[in-house]
Image (tube, rainbow, N blue to C red; front, side, top):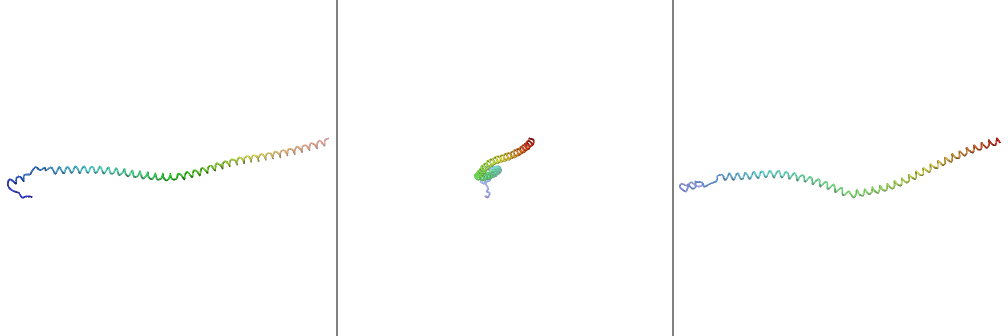
Length: 153
C-alpha cells in the first residue's frame, strides 16, 4: 500500500473510481450457475451411462446366447451327413427285411399248400382204408350169402 498523501492529489486517489462491487457476485453467480449446469449434466450423463451399461449388458447376453445357439446349430449341421448315412443304412436294412418278409410269406404259402396236400393225402388214405374195409365187409357178406345160397340149394 502506498503512503497517504495530503492535499488535492490525495483526494483523487482516495476517491474511488466507479468500481462495480457486484462484479464479484455476478462472477460467483455465473460460476455457480455453470457448476449447477455441469452437475445436472453430469447426473444426466450418469443416468444415460447406466442405461447404456444395461443395454450393453443385454446386448452382450443376447450375443452370447446367439453365439451358443449358432455353435450348437453348427454342431448339429455338421452331424447331418452322418445322420443321412445312418438313414441310408436303415433304408437298406428295411429293404432287406422287406425282401425277407416276402420270402417268408412265399415259404408260408408253400408250407400251407404242403400241409393241405398232406391232409388231402391222409384223407385219401383214410377213405381208401374205409373203402377197403367196406369192400371186405361186402365181400364177407357176399361170401356169407353165397355159402347160405349154396347150403340152401
